[in-house]
Amino acid sequence: MTSDTIHLKVDLGERSYPIIIGSGLLSDAALLQQHIGDGQVLVVSNETIAPIYLDTLLKNAAAKDTIILPDGEQYKQMATIETIFDSLMEKRHNRSTTLVALGGGVVGDMTGFAAASYQRGVKFVQIPTTLLAQVDSSVGGKTGINHARGKNMIGAFHQPVAVIIDTQTLSTLPPREFQAGLAEVIKYGLICDADFFVWLEDNIDKLMSRDSEALRYAIARSCENKAKVVAADEREGGIRAILNLGHTFGHAIETATQYKVWLHGEAVGFGMLMALDLSRRLGLLPIADVQRGERLIQAAGLPITPPAGLPDVDGIVELMGMDKKVLNGQLRLVLLRAIGDAFIADDVDIEMLKQTLADYLGRSLNPVLNSDA
Image (tube, rainbow, N blue to C red; front, side, top):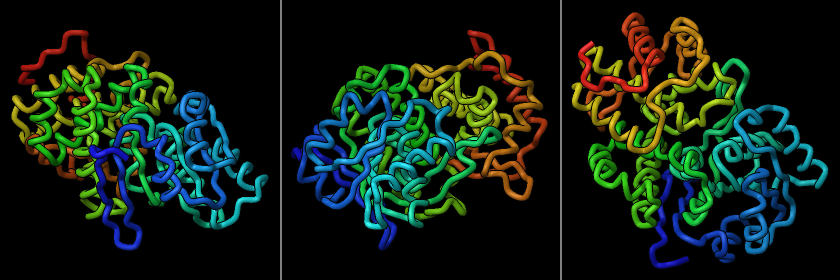
């Protein structure tokens, strides 16, 4: 580890674990062996990441067993989980085994779900290689798979024993995936950290150019924010739901397009636009804050117009009703009173929601930021 390595902690009592953020951590044998151990280990990766980073990890972690999954959100399903179970059984892994997720959010979610389920729960380590996974999905213990009727509807809460974030892996991340990860970074500023939002406004150009110091700061600040929320509400019984700003909208779009058109972060970014707009319509959020949010999302290279082929407004509302945050048949959305002040609304005016959906699903290439509609 270098002197600029950052150490954070997710404080969950006996299930607490470290988040280690630094450059070149995949080559730090002492660090990897400390958290992975020298017993049975199965490294789970995918066809995109494995050729780049797997050999380095295997060399320095002294791991032997591997399974390489196909790459893509469309493979985040039960059939893929079965292949992980098959590998564990064939290689006679026991209850003391450790699973290591080397990849993005899809790999991490599926590896965590397999670890939660295999022999009723084994250890796992997150080594996220995408920005989105580094700042969001690798932290907090949410694991799971998609169903044709809804995203992440099947899964378990299962905390990792460590999250190891090697920022050098971002150097090989395609621009589109990098920008998708920025959606989750922006989310933290919007929901609970107004000062961070201002920092993002001032430093978005540095992030877009992948400035190493700016990236390290943004990743650490995002992880700090998530760790605090998770520590306060591990299983999303209350405040943790604010981490889903834009997600109910975005998940509906992903489901409607069978996870084949937009990356998760792109859908979340567009969903946050609609959450900002709905907050304005309900008289909660000033138009100036909506404009700031949209400018930052657009500056991050995220889409601000919808993909083609979506259902009509009623169809999207129906898909939103399949979201796992629905409680007793009532749609719950994360909205904003101000930048940095999110809350969970369970009494949203459906007609206003439909107005927001109609406006954003029918957007032209030149949206009007100062509309008072």
